[in-house]
Amino acid sequence: MECFATFVMRVAMILIALVVIPARISSAQSPSFAHPDTTTAGWRPLYADDLSDAEFRAGTWTCTDGVFTASEDEVLWAKGEFDDCTLDLEFKLDSGTNSGVIVYCTDTANWIPNSVEVQITDDSHQRWATSPRTWQCSAIFGHLAASQSVVKKPGQWNRFTINCRGKDITVALNGKLVTHLDMAKFSDTKKNPDGSEIPEWLSRPMSELATKGRIGLQGKHGDATIWFRNIMIRESGSK
Image (tube, rainbow, N blue to C red; front, side, top):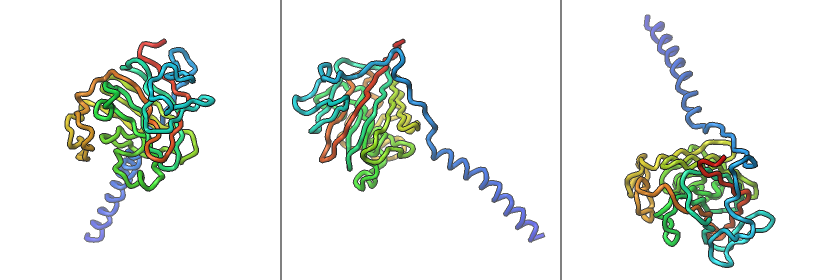
């Protein structure tokens, strides 16, 4: 009887493992995502190649053969305000790059606490690999980590699709849906809902931020360059 009971227990443990282990694996994987066809109706470039429809400090941003880059840590702001929209763009990293895509900004002079930033980093670099996950690529900076890191190593082009619908923001990178944010859940300035710490310079609760504002690209932060291309937008209601 004792041997039989041991056998039954072992079988039960195996059956539980067969259920639990695949569940853990699937929860750690990000769903596949089909990036949009930006040649279809409703899509348009966010910036002109001559930068005539952008706001930035003179001499900091350039565009050559459709590739945008900055020599300093200055934001390239698109003119006008945007609410519900989808952004689709490509970016390429330098070793150690730290940049971002900024949405819903209501104060360009003090944008960090007054916007939502989708982080761009070289996660293969030691500095970012050892940083909090909310500081790594595809995270909502300081608030919500991506489900996994799928950013390519420096020198390769990555593709972002960022969908903004009110307080709901999703981020897809390189064919994976990696981040899904509900701004309404982030009502504190000290701790995120998962208990992780919020940087002190993010001094406004994200739940209180506007869901309409400026869009910008962060430039060269530190010694590492960032490059962007094919920066397209489709606003809600576009056909």
